[in-house]
Image (cartoon, rainbow over all chains, first blue to last red; front, side, top):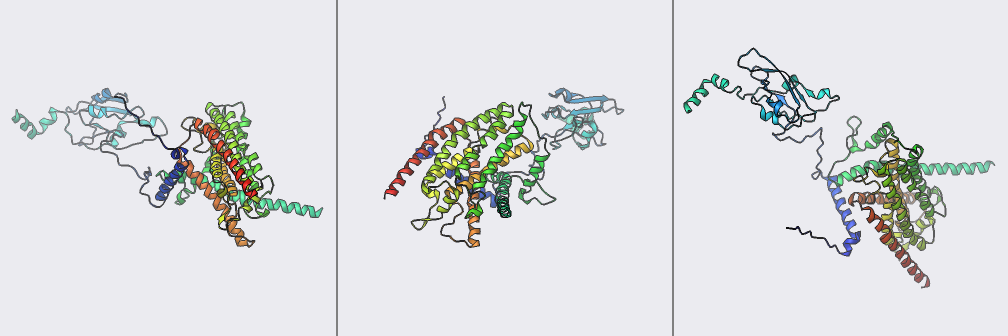
Length: 185
Length: 351
């Protein structure tokens, strides 16, 4: 259905613009006076001093989560690097002595200039190792090199995650949950 | 010989004192404050805060220090000259806009008598027209010398617009000359000190209200400020005719625009708001003179405020609307106003 556009047909007094100009001047002057004496209409946020709170779901700079012993939770499975549409994640894996842990990253670099903060890596991660919930925003630097976040940098933002890791293995270690589950079968 | 020298020296010294007191202190002072006031004022009427970051230590003074910070910034920025065949014209253009705006103040009477006028010429208003119409050269030559398409389009728009409104502004003021029978601004101001029928001040705005509206509109168009700023038109032309200007070149252009705001205020006051006269107050006592000068400055600042408010209230006209307004509305109304004034004056003289 065609949309009907209601055309305005201002009368001559309006069209002559003289009275309208004075109305406009009165309006702006009134607003000026209001803002001069009371600040309640002013919408400016004085940015570096005052910041708007981010929503809890805000995706900021990445961080790598830690195990109880403060080692990195990442097992270098490459799922995040595969899911990444911007190809900004570079992972080099190394072996670990602990037989319960698959691998660990010897390097985990994120190019923050390439990253589009889509959060796909966070969704792909089976270990709750990478998260974008640090709340860190606007990361300025003088060189491009400073925009590469390495494993140490990412871990420094991290904290211990209580999520279970390693599927069956983890479940076996907790006898109670394992029994509860088998009794359910 | 000795006597002549003394007289000449006196004249030169008095002129310098008047220049310092009126042009340097009042005009330049107001123009400098306007650079801050315009941003702060526009911010407050748009529900923003405006400039408030410049500080010395913890003193911010509501952003007043931006008046200091701006020149420092402008002086230390790169003074860029584009790849142009006319670098000399490019350098000259800001001065060509700046000097005429400043020279015009020579004939403005800011107080009673010759003491309070830098140069008392019987040409008065014609001098203002002659000099201030040179303004267009600064903008157009700057636009041309920038060797930039945006600048050129802006310059073309400006030249057409300024020349069109030059016609209407001249005709709108003719009624004033007819009524007061003089081109001398001091004469016109003094005549406005009289009272009409014993209680209405005989100001130009009382005799010629239409001419006042025409004058203010055309003057704002002459000054290329919003709503007539199609030459700048940052939405279409980057920054129009001053796109390529940076650092002090830009600052001089901007300052000459602010000086012209004060000029429009001063001329408007002299012709329409009674100049330095205060209704019902006559005499030579020093406090009356001080009041009269204060009254002139106050009225001028009122017109400055009116221009600022109009600039931040009205949206920009389209280019064709501006030309239509100038030629098909302003000019006929000015002519009609002139004819009616002539007829009425003739009847009054016969009666």
